[in-house]
Amino acid sequence: MLKVEIDPGSGFCGGVIRAITRAESYLSGEDRLYSLGDIVHNEAELFRLQQKGLVTAASLEEVPQGGTVLIRAHGEPPATYQEAISRKITLIDCSCPVVLRLQKSIREAYARLHSEGLHGQVIIFGRVGHAEVLGLVGQVGGDALVVENAKMLEDMIDSLDFSQPMEIFSQTTKSPTEYEEICNLLFFRGARLVVHNTICAQVASRHEKLAAFASSHDVILFVSGKSSSNGKVLSDLCRSANSRTHLVGSAAELDPSWFREGESVGVCGATSTPKWLLEQVADAVSALK
Ligand code: SF4
Image (cartoon, rainbow, N blue to C red):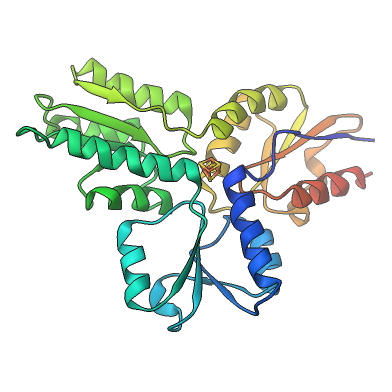
């Protein structure tokens, strides 16, 4: 028999819960709602919502005039709101309040960095092309430097103007340890840098607890959609605490050879992994001989 435990801290974050609740509430009275990009980076949950009438649109061009579009928790750049007005599209804005605060801070930093003849630099630690990052860069008309990791920063560091002030922000779901490493690289080069602590508190606290959870089990099953940025960060964290960590999208991907009789198995996931999917995976492990 295997002992199975679901991580009590795993499951959707507040921002994702809010967006999905509003989508389901809208679809209880309407046939169709468009989501600008996937509402959540989890294929199984997307499929469940598609059955209720949620349609993912890659851009507003795919939405018929008069349609209703949900803005997901990642937020959007100002251009999206302007385009919606010109296309007569109604928006249900589910941008996470934490992301909206971050967008506002970036606009304010940009104004500071370009006041009184300054030509300072806004830096964003985040995944290039990620929806949240595109929304952040859009707040300053694209005039922000996106740094995905320490290697990328090292490659471009000689092109930065260290005579000018800099302010750095992190995408909400990035690793606190990596963010510190990036900031230290800039400080080491003598940057006049203001660091904004913008990693989501729910994500940061999950990092600490998840490492402890991963090391307290023989095997870890990390359940996540393959496109989840947070899933990649957190599954890597689990793997560094427990080398027997397996990333799975659903119970169908379990391999019985991963487990030995009597072992303890921890099941956990990203901020985009639904609780019901964690339960399905845990039940499938319990059913293994
Ligand atoms: S991770 Fe945090 S900031 Fe991002 S959507 Fe969830 S609650 Fe909001």
